[in-house]
Image (cartoon, rainbow, N blue to C red; front, side):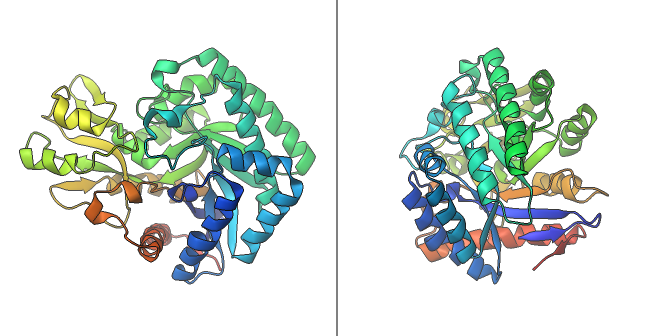
Length: 386
């Protein structure tokens, strides 16, 4: 979906296909047929943006076979889909029964991460629509905190920036990379991104603002975006997402409600802001049963809940944080980013009674999220384009 900002620039809105994880190229093609095109049809649009997730094996196959890459581009066109952004954070195994800490490997100190992201950039230049010259890729924020080798990671990102320069010279298309701050990582907050990005010192390497992660770390959107702007750090893309919010975590009924969201597949870092600063646990079950997280102040959990459907009381979502961030990102005299991506990958990790039981129900839910995002953008004065 495309929108015209009042300044005349085009804003792209997509949804991320990591909600339909596939490890192979055949699996990606099935995603387009079974999910992405039906979402487009449900929305009644001739064209729909998708934030494509390509696992390592699928990316390797595309990078090695120009004919396969052309066939993917043709399939996107045939199904009324377009790609201006990729999710390069998960490397492989995102559909596994247990992902947890595995999603942070390989990190940016491992040459595999550099090679994979380089391949993604090359693929993206071939997938960009004919009238678009700039793409974006989100990536993990250097490493999980216990596996940090910041020097090696920033060196790798400098090499990547040089490769992206060369890629633009070759193709005429620009690709930028956004480190995606996430709780528990070396770059947990937008503030944590400032020093490593200053060390890298290249305009192609910026930040991907995920509004669930922003809220989970209790970052104020205005403060965070002001700091990025003052430092000259580009917001390469934004992932529109919402976290779980528990206003009174000391109450037994609130703990019970949170416990229903603790599940074995993904990591759900949980945070609270105390008078002494941010405190947290690596996962939701540890917060609920461990007794180590202070409960006199609200808790937020890194669980991407559907944007259009608040969890049942006594829980809520951090949708207000998303709205505040979006107002700054897209509602000012000039947009701070032009790539927006709805990223609710946890539909099948929701408590059983909330999970979509059929493919059609999942399509309906994703379309409802995109409709909400569209309405937020038009309320900010953007005009939806055909």
